[in-house]
Length: 324
Length: 291
Image (cartoon, rainbow over all chains, first blue to last red; front, side, top):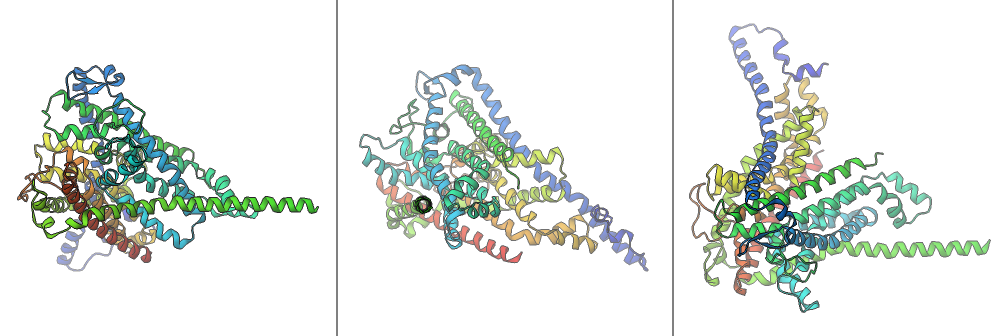
């Protein structure tokens, strides 16, 4: 049967036997007419729904770029990218994004140092070692962990992690990069685990069986057979987690402080790009002022960084995927 | 020969020992997530359980911790979800149907797919910047419920689209062919044969998207959802506040009483999220049994 022809809407009604009575014919024609109107109208409406995503992207880029251009009339782009002092709210004003970038990077590095080893090890455990029943318990728990709102993690960082950090390093302030970074790391563990585990699950069982048949232990098969085969997916999960940590907002706003510091000391208070945007929008900033423009400039930097990371993750996942 | 055999046996024993040790290490790493979740819940329970009183639900925010509640925040969150739900459902499912059932394999489709995947990775605060410019300023919705709901709709749309796409893809081809064989046209097939059997999967995705929206703070701070709202919004153009913002507000105050209030607010939020997650899991279990 020619399904394609049916799909285009020339269904049975159009080719079927002619009705005996005119009224029935009219009713059927009306029904068929309505049917074919719906059939023609819906793809257009649905296409419009899909175009919302394109409009969103265009909107994001347009808003960021148009306001950022205004900002760069007041602040030279070179000063913005290479300046080492960020003090937009106090005189003398200075707009060098490096301190914010350094703060973001510090948080992200701490978070990844927590999340990548733990996440990968959990993925190996869940896909190579854990019995089925164990997986069925642990995976939903990780999903719950992934669904906890970031403001809740922020509270956790401030009321649980910070006292622990301060007990170990007494000179630490209330707001510090370390406890915020650790909690951001906890937040992205489920992401690393579930994406890496997906990648490792996609490795065919026959490869493992081959390794076992040659006398490999589970660890040897995991390390030498499964891990290399799933590497693209694992690396992609790392990059995505990194990007997620860069864009994380509430934990760092609550726990990392609001002092743009060009430092690598995790015990100091810092400010990330996201936290700066929140800080400005909490205050009464006049539209058109230079502070107002600065949140768009910082937002653009944030958007570009996360976009590049996301594209990198997709490239890695697609390019180096092993096909079986 | 014996020497070789015993050396071999030693080697095997050593490899087994390594395997055993790493087994323990991996299991320990897995428990980190579980332990963290428990620590988080216990920490918040201890801080907040004392403030989990009727006043929390009945009172408006106040400068005095004893009289402060989050009524306007709870109602605000519910209103926002109520506005978001139909809009994001229609847009998200519509886009997914178009991508899965109608779109060809051309460059445009590939572009839209890549675009949706990329949008899912955009930090939520960037959506806040978009909402601030587009809805609050350009469409002049001010800092209203509607501006907040629109911003959050755009934020959760990629989640719904991806979930709905997966649900649609899981519908067996035979269902579509059976519908065509009965003389249904394309839209009848999609709306009456494909959509109903994909619906549980789609709803799971929608619930998860809503639970993301209800906990999201940063974009709503951007568009200026007020923190001190001592009234309930009467129309969609009124100012509003939501639970996470009220919690954030309480957290940023120095007095410990307000921190307890924040913890109690978090308990309410988490209970709501747990309920939604539970519903999603129930739906998914029902769904996976069907196919």
